Length: 143
Length: 371
Image (cartoon, rainbow over all chains, first blue to last red; front, side, top):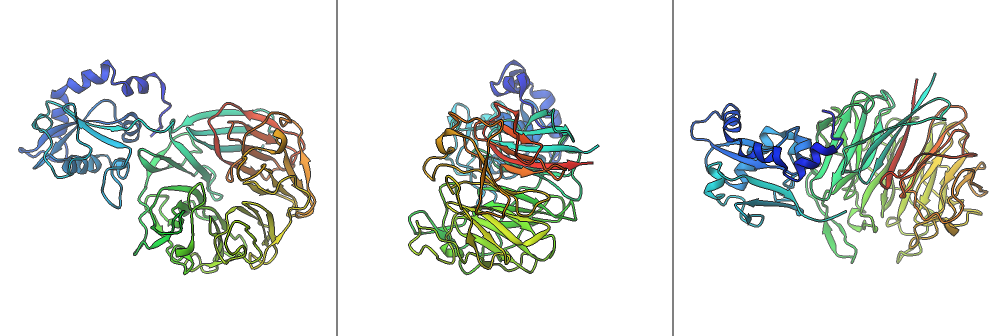
């Protein structure tokens, strides 16, 4: 993988530009991709995840990620599936030893800050249904 | 014809500088891993195109990358640095017990023989080893488990293993340096460790000559004389001629004996380089003059090297991993500054040229000889 030389594309992604938005709305293709993945499970939920720019680079993806999440859709099940699919993200969102959210990472969905919700609490129905994305982002901190 | 490659880690990415053996013209490639702090990159002595890179961020933690083509492309490898067994505690800044918590990799030291074997010095202080090219890591827990461990304490920059020396004459012998605990030596391949700080004096400590607690900034060893070590301590430049058993001060006529890096000439074991910094609270060169000091007598007598370096209004620092030498003849010497310059000398330090400027703050510089 040739790592990131930033550039306009990355900046546009970071701002969630038009392309990203189109991809975000582009449910069908993403959903097909997700169903065609590991689960293939009929009862899996297709969950859309928005990653911050550095983690998209690390995962080698552009735009949103669509995941097939079996069972209850929670922070834990979504992040477990995310890390299973993109092993390079292991330890970057959750501390490896405690499995807790890293301090400067936040979780948003449906205009709510879910960062402090229990990891096994169900995410909003709009996330479970794929209507709204689960957003992982870096807090405004540092220089 | 020989070539030289410099691996430069900065606060906001990595850069790879290359030159032919004349070392007059340099090309700059980067940034790699833009936006990430790159504490250290280092190539394998056995395969210079195998490079390990430590990238970290306050947001997303530690990531490790490996290149197999000299830094052209990179592969994400393992970042699971889980301490072995009981974590235990060390002293916190206020003297209370504090659990060991992994923060980042400060330093990679690839094996002298095997490109797939590499050691990682981490914060909170511990050493890990990978034998599969960085895919997985296992702690050499005898270091953290040393009986003095509960008395180790962080310095202002954290509590880290920042220097790892692999003895070329005795493959079972290793040294590490920890801020702020001191020097430790293993004679059994990293299984067990013993503090080697006799002769160090740190006035800030309740017991200035205690067994541990010294803020050692860097140690260096010449392959032709592995019993001799040089040290830049928080204050004091020190020397040992018995593999760390005892140390003596060789600060001599330095304008300040505070500093971070210490490096040795590739072909002259008694030629030592340091960069004096004003003090522990004023992290820039004395009088705003950037001067490398060289001793050709193994310490004690030092001469300033100023050719091509700014001699007024220079207020940058040179960090502990940000100085290195190549093995060409004459020996090349290199260092990077927190002001984003990388300076190179192709003649052992007589003349310096800024081969990169306006980079993010430089954290590490490693020189590689390429045939």
